[in-house]
Length: 451
Image (cartoon, rainbow, N blue to C red; front, top):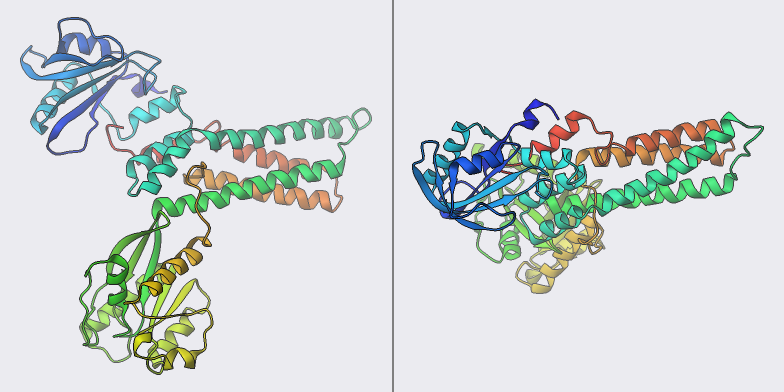
């Protein structure tokens, strides 16, 4: 820790605005002195006991009647002496309490500084710290459950187990390489099997991490198609509400409309776009340009075509443009006919109507299939969360793949040992054991000030 980490910090831990209560947190070596000066009660504060007190300012003027909870080091969130003041939820009260704390020597905490101190004081590893930020930012029940799973630290234990296996293999290899006359080489089939097993475990971690990212960040789906194909009607049907204006007049939708639904616990961001056609006025043309941008950035393209009529040129162009990307083709208006759907003869396409419940169920299933292979997401299993974790696992996968190739070709053990050492080293950045300050700072910059 630098000198700033030894300061006593304070911050409001509850969201801005009025409420029933607000919480002011204090952490650092001067916490007890601040409590003695600013908190008045009938008896001294006891650890982990909520006590009804009077909170005063630096001059002794009463600011509020509140609950005070003292946490002693190292049995606190940060590992330091801590104090929480649960005041009435007036912004004026909390502002005055903060002003008094700062006047008595505390410093305003930086974003994430409480959790940063918890990390440096050994209360949690870097993966758990990043999971705290994910939990605070969770927008769905699934995202909250996934973040809670990561807080337990199981993923760090898995990565450390892989590092331990690599360390043991490297120790055996070092002896055989440095003292070939005295230490026999480890059996190559056995070493090859170990490397293959560790590679597969890392691949599983990466796959689970990608699915966890879906739960946190969601899947973007651009609803595109010619005018009057039923895009806005589809959005409304999937939402279960009339969010977009529906009209028989071509070009009604001039801008993108974004809403979110949940499918299998995954937030899916649906973007309704302007219909694409060649002859459009200036305003409609601007909407079509935004459609192109939405289509380019979306993970999945959901093409809505009029299946009751022959396919128009704009539809054929869209089918060609999206042929090599993740997409779902939906021929709408089956209640009016299916000439267009039969003419295209696309066996993977969905044919139906936005007013049909079975069609909507099929579309939700197709989104899940394209977005995450239709597999149920195990939210109880820890997964990769931060960018540096993906980088570490990706680097280790690459190193072990190269080592496996070297062993399979029968090359000297020095080649494989070098790659195994590289994999061991990059995995050290996972939990922060060998993490760079830039990585650590990047994680805690995501936090709110009181966390």
